[in-house]
Image 1 (spheres, rainbow, N blue to C red):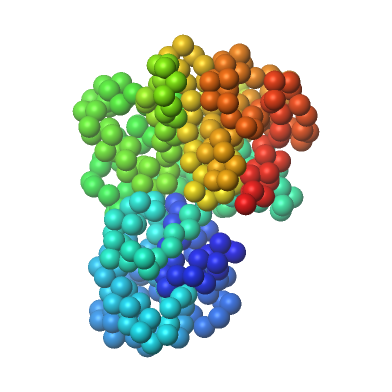
Image 2: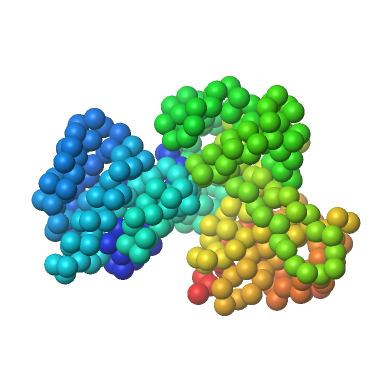
Length: 384
């Protein structure tokens, strides 16, 4: 909530973005309840009808925070908001006028809201993080298994949590994707999503995916773009450096919520996950999402891999702190791979870590520290 308040204190409009069911509306109501406000759900026909003449309607609430939920349903509002913001500025109303909620990425909303350039700030809201789970006395392992969507994480049983996630996937495929993007057969997109789950953290090979889907590589790339825009999939870019070595150029692809990975694969509990081939990729993706989410704003994530196998699972270029390197392991007794040390010798990051599920922090030699994922996230969040 603090990040939304801060953004509203310096901009006339703030876009709170994140996938559906992540808690954006609950957070927006909490912010709105702190002062005079009005809430409009633009998926509701009645609230859309109020905006038949948006200038006339919104002019009545110049002294209130206006919350516009699911603004993608009325994209023409962006140009209206620009005029209202500019007129308000002339009358001394400069900040905290509109809180916009959307189920798409910042890049996609920026394209829709180009007219609000210089008048809008963006705040991304992800699922429940390991830091939040521990602060609420939650179980980090349960968070990994069920994922961070609040209704899934807080369900009374693993079975009910899995059922919730399966319903969530079906709703996205049958209702939300057709609403937010081009018409894509739900069955085709589900097959792609499931293939990505099987290969969690693998290098993107659009041609191979296209062959399996009996589609073109361009079509697969377009479908993948949509899942990225909806904040359901992350493309982790390779780190590029002029080191005289052949570096991998393809991104790695992760489904961003571990619970969705498990639901797509029919994995309902920890016992089933522990024996499944995806367990390593699932843990890696879970850690990566938590570390990226905790890192300071404007941090740039990537990975490093050479053609000869030297690899760093996650690199974070952190403003003011340089390049940090992370090896991710699920075993408490694991040590960094030789390829990690070799890659660090190439890049010379000032901080290097092995991140595991434990609760202890200790040196491993060679400048590498072993740190549990929760503590590592706290360390990143504390940076300025």
